Structure formats: C-alpha cells, structure tokens
Image (cartoon, rainbow, N blue to C red; front, side):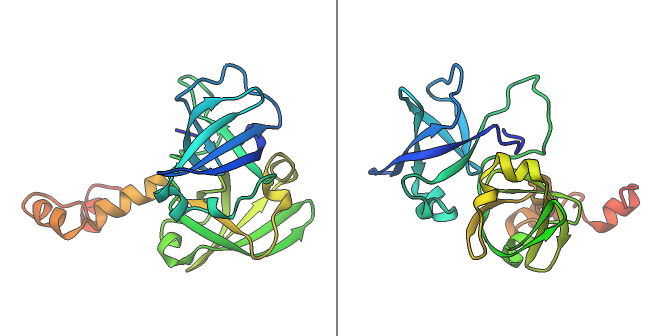
Length: 220
C-alpha cells in the first residue's frame, strides 16, 4: 500500500522487452537505503516489484496488463518518473490510500497559473470520473492530490509549488497522458450499492445495501 506522497524521482536508464512485458532499469535521484529484492515500489503510480538491485538503482518488471492500462509505453530512456516505496507499518499516513493499481489514463487538457498554484484540468472520461468527488482524493502519476473540481468526464486539481518541484508535474504539458488511480473506497461503495447481476441475485435473498438501507440506518 502507498500514500501518494512521492519520496523522490528517478530516471529511466533502460527499457527492455521481456516475454511477459517489460523490464525497467531505474536510477533514483537520491539512492534508497536498504532497498530489498521483492519489495514493492510505485513507479508513476504503478505498484512494481524490485527484481534486481544495481549499483545505482534497481530493476522492475511490468506486466502486459499494466502496460495496457498505463502510460508506461510512452516512457523513453532518460524520462523522469515518480517513486514511492511501499508504506511500512507505523509510518505516518500523509496522503490517501493508494493501491498502485492503475484504473486508466487521463489527458492533461489545460494548465492554468493561479498565483503560485497551478491548476491542472485532466480529461479522465466518465468511466473514471464516476469515482471522483470534489474535495476528494485522486492519484495522478502516483501523486496524492485533492480534487478542486469534479466534472462529468474531467477533474481539476490544484498543485502547490512543493508538489510541482518534488514530482514530475513541473515537466507536464497539455496533451500529455497520465496514470490515474481513483479513490479505492469509492470503488468499493459503488460495488456494494450496484453489485453485478450474479451478486445481486444472492443479496436479494438477504438484505441488500442500497440507498434505502443507508438512509434507514442513519448513513444519509
């Protein structure tokens, strides 16, 4: 599990096609202490497993499924990526719950200065937008950000100077695609309220969780 607080950026040193997908070689801008084989690390929001430790970085494999759902195919040697090690028990929880499982991609439609802040309008499509609420959280390229405005098929996020400087966002441009992970809690709530037909048949025999149920039990 991650929190969406990027601890450093890294540079793609090598991209190697494999039988199962792609192997990335990444060199962090500052070295990790005691990085271990098999541990999880988020690369632009994708939860990847460290498969090799190199003198100045590490390697990680990307499956075909992750390639299909993410912007990984757009990366080139020399590109910067956001990095975050998996959360350890007892760590401070500064962002929001981020699984590292990308829901899809979005496209930056507009970047607008607002004093020191930059407003990013990102088209994410209605499939992803249904899991987004104003003042809620969303992970963009692994960065935990607050939603300033939620539309039918887009979101606007306000990025402070620190987040711009500490992540790859300062290099972002209009038209660029980004990885999107929506709030995990929103996805669970949606499934409980609107279960697939097979699950709905089983819940109909008992007490389904629906809007009436929530209202009757004081949740609405």
